[in-house]
Amino acid sequence: MPQLRAALVAMLGTVPGIGHVHDRERYVRDATALKALYVDAGQLRGWWVRRVETERRAINMARNRTVHTWQIRGYMALDDAGASEIAFDALIERIAQAYDADPTLGGLVQEAPLAADSLRGIQVADVGPVMFSGVLSHSAVLQLKTWSYS
Image (cartoon, rainbow, N blue to C red):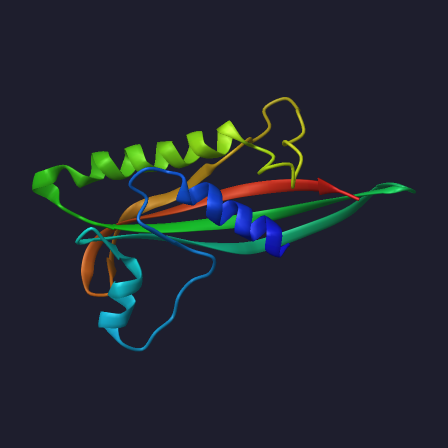
């Protein structure tokens, strides 16, 4: 599992303009230190990854399937005059495209099973404005399911 988390973080790191990417939600007491973890090129812009669910099932006597659900949470300072919402939406799409370019994350997982009307790739669970470390920001909650077999 540490390899899978690292692969997700590395994949996110390939996205142009993503900002800082963390392998976990970062907690600090000082707002200045928190901003230091998320400010890139003078703008608050950063992401973190968390496993939020694991489902393990026996497929048959010899094979098991493990499905991890990952939450990818991101923030970007809001700039209404600069149409930052449009830029943030474009960033979300670049994240989805980066995953679609390598849905096995370098061979660590299998592609999602094909089924009628099945979810595949990065899903957008929530997008909206939030206050993050005292900065009015865009926030996105993305979800991803990864499949592996043993």
